[in-house]
Image 1 (tube, rainbow, N blue to C red):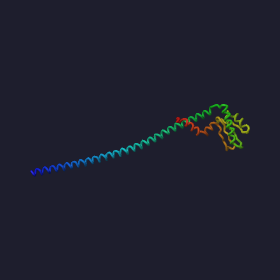
Image 2 (image 1 turned 180 degrees about the vertical axis):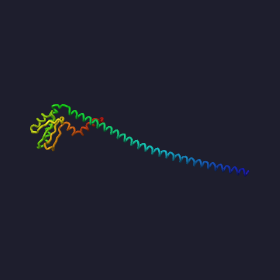
Image 3 (image 1 turned 135 degrees about the horizontal axis):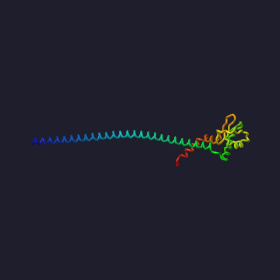
Image 4 (image 1 turned 180 degrees about the horizontal axis):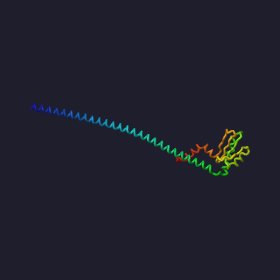
Length: 193
């Protein structure tokens, strides 16, 4: 019996060792599985972060490009509209008959333009519709007034030596104030705040 007790004790001891080694191996396997899973999750998160960063960069670039293209299209359309409006104004100035008040105002403008000539001999070129009114306003100064068919709605005053030329015509004033006119036209296109 002593042999059987010894064998039973050895078996119990072996079973305990086997159980302990199995538990230790299971714990090591579980730790390796946890570490592998953590590494897999970290790699996945890293890959997802890189992909998200790449997509965000690409999206930001695409949005910036689309924004620039849209702004370009809007600016091009605005410029075309401004040119159309200014073209219609120029056409209107060339076609419209002047009212008596406009004739008087343009004749006064030509007379005031003569002040810039100083003492130098000057010449006034004007339209046939304004010739008499301008001649009447400039008669006291003895300045000759010529009709220029190329002018529309106004006059040009110049010195004989060519050093001073004042464009007192409505189209000339439109050209001189075109930047301001463009600002007003564009401002009128903006929606109210």
